[in-house]
Image (cartoon, rainbow, N blue to C red; front, side, top):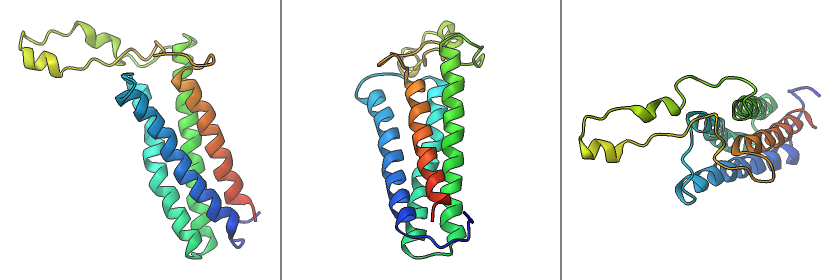
Length: 168
């Protein structure tokens, strides 16, 4: 399928689904943080970036499709969304591997900050939130950590975006 082929309902519906799906996915992560009390590590926060970029991008794809913009615009936005989700999936795989101790994580990820001396200033100590180590999963649900679930979610969203970009 060519990127210049006419777009239609598939691209419009997919862009809308992606915008909502990406927002819900990152909203769940934010809910676990702010309501559930799970403090994200540095890699967890980095895995949210494709969603923060992807939601407005998919809203643009939805708008482009709805307004009948030239097909390469809509299809191109969907492809960029797919690339973002594939990047997010790669980050999730990397983070999962760090959690399972298959490879080393970043040296500056959480655990090293615990011994930091804040000079006895109580306000500084209250404001200093020490993120958890990237090598420890905050929890596992059905055998997967948050990073593992992100791999599955990112793969699903990437598949939908790729299918929409190339489908007639």
